[in-house]
Image (cartoon, rainbow, N blue to C red; front, side):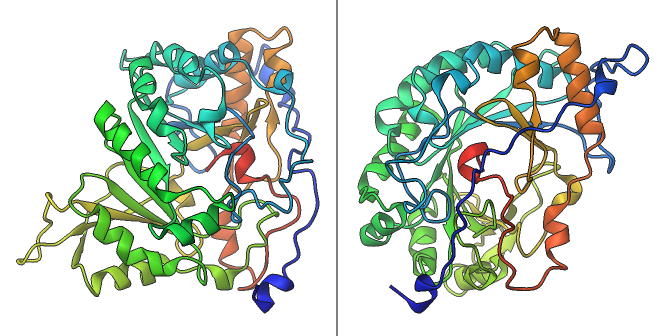
Length: 386
């Protein structure tokens, strides 16, 4: 244990704060809003991406997300009756789609721990945008259950998966997941997803300085030419239980330079508006993108804020709507869903909430002291997903 670890302070707190009340104007006849598919917030950002957490449970104890000293055997998880049902989730998804959402990502915790998740995917796969297009339905997983679930997920209508993998060295990986889970089983899950046609597959590696930066080049070598997009994520100050400090962040610029030292890269254009990852393609001998070799991505939410075109909303396991990954509170939609609210009421509520949105935490962070830790009232990643 390092000296830094012995002095790390992890505040004990309830990371599920009481939800904010939905604006009353949403239900007044004169201010009721309907869905047009063109809704924008105070900064002109459209709503296109909905992330839905389906469980607050996970079978890993990664120290940057669900550290074992907090999420131990006595931790009080949400009761099953507190969770939105699949029918309730689908109803809310339909409301968001009417407002312009085109992509739904299922998250957790570990979403594959939610029993009969395939049933939810089947329901979501039936939804269509106002123009009649099917949704882009994807899922983020730690890969531990993927080998046994990949085909049934594909059959249910899931299109793609993103797998969290923080290193190829088995000792490093077991240490980071903190439950002694072998990396080989996750790699088997990735191959099962490929075989099932869940692609293109993306791999997310959280880089934490002093912990796993030595895995950057081995990961790049392993996935180059595989058809899988490897993305490196800066260690973020999400929540308050991970003891985040800026000196544990390895900036994406350093990651890119490290890879370039062995594997030449060329920067690529963003794939779409609101893309969180900066794209870099492996270069050929002429300095052009070698498409057969593939690409990597870097997600720099600490050192290069991308709040300006953020088009994502997050629905928690128990039905709270969060407008930012770094939010302190969400809006309580479950009380509306389980009350007398009509679909029109829900559409108006979501519209009022989004149109009042002004969140830009990552931009604000740039003006904070360099080593300032996360505030004590931050919602946890394990609660609303990444």
